[in-house]
Length: 126
Image (tube, rainbow, N blue to C red; front, side):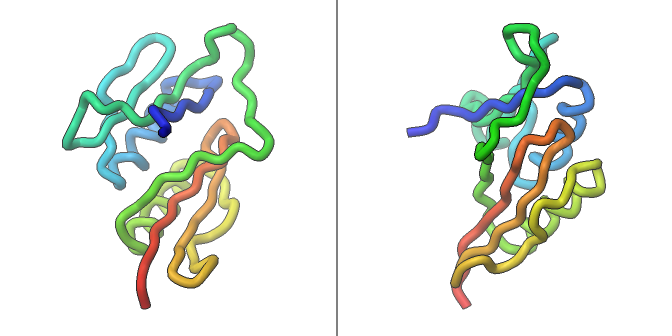
């Protein structure tokens, strides 16, 4: 149902450096960079773009959507932990440390450099 996700930034180069690092952890790579956006796709299929970071088309400042969250499915808890800690080390803000939120569900929450809410999560069995 979802084709791709896009978040806004006010500093494209800084945002691309951030997303290059954290998305590498979950096997996404940047496949294009222009003056206005960076695009990311699975390492196994560079044509299947899933995520963009962009400066707003209308030339206004990027703003955060209240109640908006971008969630990345991650294959295991240890990778959720690495995703979260790496993002924090790059300047993201902690919005909820990695941990079990519901039985068999493991989540972490953060705000990227522009304040966009990002979630890394996985399912597991005990």
